[in-house]
Length: 353
Image (cartoon, rainbow, N blue to C red; front, top):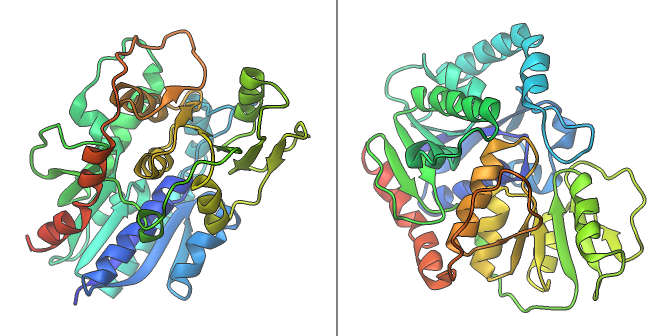
C-alpha cells in the first residue's frame, strides 16, 4: 500500500471533484490518501461535499486567486496578477510550509492538481517521492491551437502556470475529452476523472433546465437568451453567491453535490461555464449542454472550443472573436469507453515506479 499526498487548487469546483475521484480510485487500488492540502484565497468558500470525505486529514493554505470582473461574468487577468503580487511574501512562506510538510510526511506519491505553490515546493523535495501532476490545462499546451490575438495575457498566464506545475513533476496526467493526441514523456493523455457516484448514475430527461455558473452575470445572459419564463423553469447553482433577485422561474439552489447530481440526472438541459469537469460529467450522462465561457478566462475559451468541435456542447451565446467551428455529432460511446480506462491507466502509472 502506498501513501499519497494531495495538493489541490481550490479556486473552482473542477479540481476539487478531480481530487475526490482520484482518491476513490487510489483507495480502490489499495492505496491511502494520508493528507489533502487545498490552496485558495479563503477556506470558507470550500464546499462541504469536498471537505467531508477528507475530514480529519484536510489542511488549507493561502494561494493565488483570480479577481472577478465587475460585471460578474469572468476574470480580470491583469488585476489578478497585480493583486497577488502584494501577497508574494505570504505565498513564499506557504511554499516553505508545504516543503517542510512533504519532508516530514515522506509519502510515496504526491498528486498535484494544478496548484502553483505546491509545484514550487515540490521542486525541492526528498528523493524517492514520485510527483504526479494532474490537469486538463496541459492539453491546450500540447495541442498548440492557434487563437490569434484572443486573450494574449491569459494565454501567456496559462502557458506560464503550466510550465511551473510541469517543472515540479515526474509524470503529468493530461486530462482530455478524447485520446486522439500524442503526448511525449513525461506527459500522458488521461481520461476525465469522474466520481464513482456519477459513473453509476442514470440520466432520465425531465422538464426543468439546470444552470451552473461561477458568477451571477451569466445567469442574466441565460435570461436574455430564453426570457424570464422558460418552459419548465430553471434550477440555478452559482459558486459565488448571487446578489440580484432573479425572475420567479429561475430558482437559486444551495451548492450541495448530491442535490446537484440528482437535478443533473433529470434536467432537460445543462447551461454552464466551460469548466472541464462539469462538462465531462454531463457528457458522461448524456445531458445536452450549453456553454457560456467565463469572460477573460483563456482556459475556458479553449475548453469551450474543444467541446464545440467534438459535438459535446453548443454555445450559450456568440461573441466577437469566436473561431468558426465545424460541429460534428458527439460519439458518446467512444467517450464513455475512454472515461472507463482511467483506473487501468492509473494502475499503469503507479506501476512505473
